[in-house]
Length: 352
Image 1 (tube, helix red, strand yellow):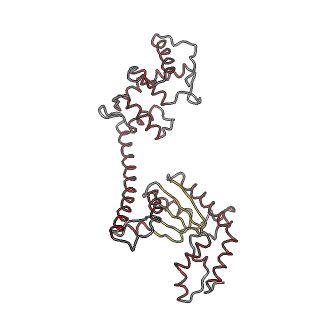
Image 2 (cartoon, rainbow, N blue to C red):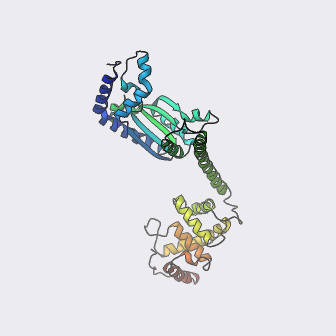
Image 3 (tube, rainbow, N blue to C red):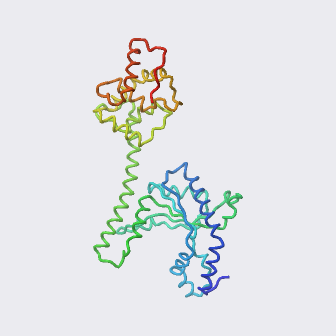
């Protein structure tokens, strides 16, 4: 029963929190799983985390934000009705543009009780920088709310914070700055400058993503007219490699390292790389067959090793170090027979 007795309501809330803590924890974990599963296929995210707010922290928040105003107008209260973030979740996205997309996707699965757009609030001020993110209060809605495994969470709302990695980092660091308002002007300026740099970093990361996508698309459009003057890069490498190995998943970090290694051997333009691959593909493919390998075997020559053999075949002097000694010797022995029209029936030992 609501009242104006703060001491009484504190104890009521403590009892409520303790009696339902297991439910809150279970709900938090369920909401994390749901959100992860919803976003997994559409948007790459950094993390989805959650927590149940400590009971004493809840009481402090109520006292700070609501108690005085309610008691001044003699409105009875229960503390639990004013703690909307008792269950709190956070989605950390990679790019600021994903925040609205995440909101829209989740709106199809959850009932939006309240939205606090700190991005719009911050960007409406021309001389203010700081934490930007989207806070939404959510509840389950049908058809998920009707499912047996979620029925006991139907009356629970939770706060979801959606922010980028950069915004998350700024928020964490900002909370460590003890004083931000009643301080000398020079310190205020430094804090504002730092906040502006974080905002700029968010924009630049997204700008780089867009430029990366444009560069990939440009190389694909020019696949038949690859540059003869520019240096091979990850984008032009993938245009050639993905065409020859369409079923192989080229992981970005491996592509980066491999392309850097290739250009270390000397100037290698995209058009020259394509010509080398076209020239050597059939020969190295026959070499794989000669070794009795197919792509499903664990130690079969993967596309990177196939390309190494192609480059070595094309220019044994320049690319001598691109294969280990035993790999070179094995391949040289086979090439000698191949060039003389006698590949032989006996298989050579498989490569490691």
